[in-house]
Structures are given as structure tokens and as C-alpha cells.
Amino acid sequence: MKFATKIILGTWIIMALCFSLGSLYIVRNNFQFSYDSIIETKQRQHLINRYSLEADVRGKVEKEDDFSIGLVKKCVKKIEDYGQKDTGVILTEIKEKAENEIFYKNIGIDKKILNFIETGGAVHYEVYETDEKQYLLMASLIDFYGSKIKIVNRYDISAIFAERDRQLNTFMKADIIGMTIAFFLLFLLAHLLTRKIKKLSVVSSRIAEGSYGLRTEISGHDEIGELSRNFDRMADSIESHIRRLERDVKAREQFVSDFSHELKTPMTSMMGYSQLLLGNSLGREEKEKALDYIYSECSRLQKLSNTLLKMLGTLEETITKKWVYTEWIGEQIEKICLEEMKKSKLIIEVENRQIYTDVELVVTLIRNLVSNGDKACSTKESDEVKVLGKMEEASGKYLFFVTDTGVGMEPEEIAKITEPFYRIDKSRAGSEGGSGIGLAICSKICQFLDITMKIESVPGVGTTVCLAFPEAKGIENPKD
Image 1 (cartoon, rainbow, N blue to C red):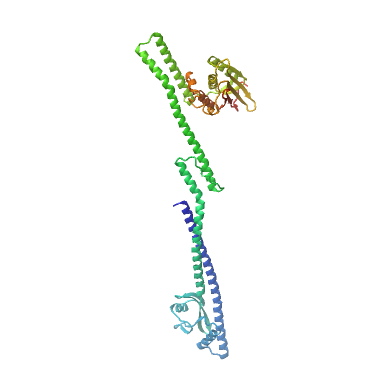
Image 2 (cartoon, rainbow, N blue to C red):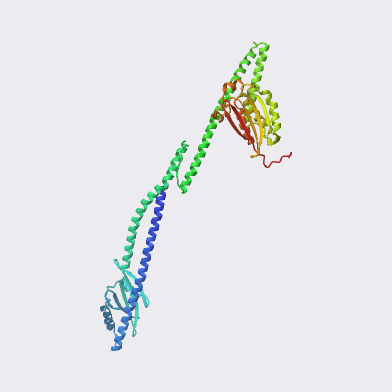
């Protein structure tokens, strides 16, 4: 059963029950009030009849000094003549040792009336029902000079029962009409309320099928609007996560492809040289050349493997941070890189401060940046790579700048330059033995050490890489 149907039926049933119970309660209260009122009215009327009869009979007896049943019948007839003809009257002489005798009646008598006369106390009443009408029987006992006379009045109270039935029929018709109208109004209301939920269901189903760009875009300040906004935020997060996973899968596929390509050329060459060595057809000089090539290529592949493992974070080395002087880092960079500079001059200017970091990883990081800068240059006479270190007092961060005057990069290349095996100039990198993973390693090191790396480049002017080292808060410097 659909949610809208549940809302319609549930609300409709509750409304029908409440309306019906309310109607019954109103009719019952009205009837009870009318019933109590008519009982009270007829009781007073009966007492008036009784006292009138008693007073009349006693007045006659005092004048004539003779009491008889005939005198009572004559007085009752007089009361009927005064306007009580619509009231049934029965007079019964109550005898202790003989059967009671009904000596006057103006209505028919059945077993129920006879049973009412025989039972009851001095004053009592009972509702008497026939097939078509309802009557109130009311009786009281009068003692006339030793003779006990029971006067019974019958009053027609069918009107209050008919009014009750009329009210029930009216409320039943109103109930049917009202609940029919309510059903259609509930149908419209449920459709309006569930329209947004249906849209939410359709969008979620489409997203499950792969349409990750869809959104509900349901406005409103109610719970459904809030649910829609939360759903859209969740969909944004899922889409972003899926896109990221797709990019990761593509990157892994490209990584495997590029790595396979990197291995293919040296492996083919080494297999060729190995076959020549196995054939014993080479001279001593050629054998040494072949062995030297095989050794150099094996060394390069080993280095490539180690750098890949570093980049993937799978080496068992742990990060060891300590306080170190930046001037010492500059000296290490100069010692390592000076002999490696082939196309540019190396300039190092470092403001001596202490930073809290892993020395080995930082030296590797700056060395890779210097190496990449040198490869982007043309000649030592015209180009240079400059390493500048200084403290940024406002932020409390120490900054290293590695700037070259090489070929530079286009803006779209900067976003891709840290991807594994990505090369701007593949022919140049291949001729120099580069593998295209230098900046990927740099990016990984920056993640490990919480260093912010920012790359700016202008084609034909050069490239500047800024490394912002985090401030070491709460870490005691033993040399302070």
C-alpha cells in the first residue's frame, strides 16, 4: 500500500470514527436530557391528578358522608372532562385477601400493564413500549378510608424517541456527506503532500541507476524541504566521491600503463645485451660496455622502484621529526645538487631559523625541485635555479622558494604536474632518463609533513615553487 493511500485511509477512518462517536454522544445527551425532562414533567402531572382525585373524593365524602367505588369513578370522569383525555387512566382496588379489581379504565390493558399494576411500591414508573409507540406508566397508591386505590396514568412519550431517531438519521446523512467530501479533500491533500516525496523517490532511483548529477531541488521550510536539502548534500558528496574514485581508477590505469612503458625499453635492451653476452661473439670492450649498460639500467630501475614505493608510502621507513637549522638544509642541498646542475647555476640564500621536520624528506623534496628546475633550463650561462629561505613573521611559517628561469608551464599543466609519470616534454624527459614521478614524490612528502606546496609558472619566464612549513606549536625546542 502506497504512503499516500495510507495517509488517506488512516485519516479518513479516524475522522469517521471521531465524527460518528461525536454524533452519537450529542444525540445521546440530547435524548437523555429530553427523557429526564419528560419524566419529571409527567411525574408532576401524575401527582397533580392524584392529589386532585384525592381532594375531590374526600370533599365529596365530607359532604355526603358516604364513600364508594362509584364515587371515585365519578371523580375520575370529572378529571377527564377537564382536559386530561389524552392521558390513560386505570383505577384498581388493591385487596389483601382477594384478587385486585380494576374498576375503571379508559385504555386497553395487556399483560405488561397488568404486571406493572401488580408490582411496585406506593409511587413508581416504567417505560412501556409497543410495536409503534413508547409510553410512560406511572402509578401511586391512595388510601381512602381503609380502601387502597392505585391510580395508574399512561403518557405517550413517543415524541422524544422519534426525535432521537430523527437526529440519528440527520447525523448519519451528514456523516456520509461530510466523510465523502473529506475523502476527496484528503485525496487532494495527500497528493500535494506526497508529490515532493514521489519526486525524491524518482530522483533517488535515477541516482541509483547512475545519474549522479540529478538533484531533487525541492524548496520549502518544512521537514520534506529539509530532507530534500540533506538528500542533495548527500548526493553531492556521493557524486564527488564517485568522481574521485573514477579519477583514481583512471590514474591507476594510467600509472600501470606508464610504468609498464618505463620498464619495457630498458628490459628489451637488457635482454638484447644478455643474448649477445651469452653468444660469446663480443670483444672485451663490447662486453664491458654491455655489462655497464645492464648495470646502469638495473640501478635506474632499482631507483625507480624505490621512489615508487616512497610515493605509495609502502616503505617501512618512519617519519622522524626534529628541530633543524634551515642553513644546514641549504648546505646539504648545495653539497648534493651542485655537481648535478647541468643546465643552470645554483644559488642558495637561506635565512637561518629552526624548523621542526623530517630532515631526510625535506632534503629529498628540495633536491627534486632543484633537479626539475635545472631540467627546465637551457644553459648555465643564461639560466639559474635559486633556493631562497625566509621566515614569514605574520603567519609564523618558514617558507622555501625554489625558482628557475626555465621554459615555464601553461596554467593547465600546473594542475597535472604532480600526477605520477606526467611529463610536459616527454622527449626531453626520456632523453635525460627522467621518469615523471619527481613532483609526485614531492607532493607525497608535502602530505606527510603537512607542508603547503604552491606552484606558479609563466611560459618563457620560469617557475616558482613555494613550500610553507607549518608552525611547530606546543613542541619544546631543547636549544631555546
